[in-house]
Image 1 (cartoon, helix red, strand yellow):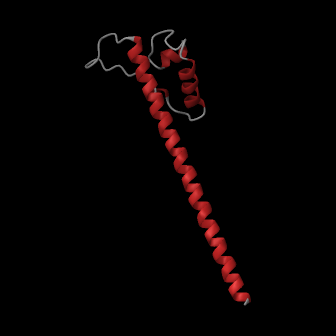
Image 2: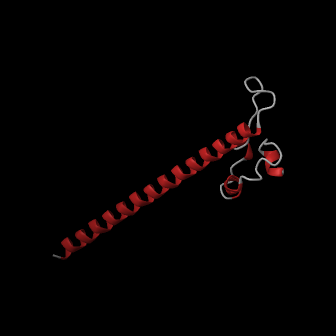
Image 3: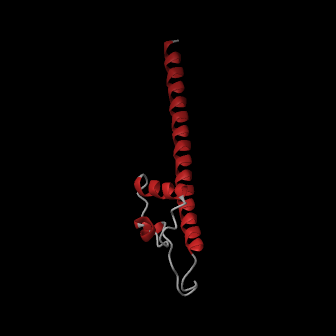
Amino acid sequence: PQLERVLNLPQDSLTKEIKLTQDIMQLFIKYHISSDLLSYEEITDFEDVAPEADRRLAAVRGHVAAMQAMIDEAKREEVEERRRQAEYEMMQRRQREEEERARRE
């Protein structure tokens, strides 16, 4: 009930949403994502006065998916940067080895 309250969801709307609940908790705990980035934000000017639980849940699910996509992209970029760094270091090492061999000859 507290998680639903924080996300502006109707009571018991996460009861059958085990994977979504786990994903939300992971974003909170592991990545320290603020609840306001995941919560349903009611815009009374454009929305019905009492939007259905499904629409609220879909909005939160979309926010969670967007955060996960952003984190996955950051991980891919980090892996690619590490790969480039290792490649550069290997190239530097080879160059030093070749220079050392040339000096010995």
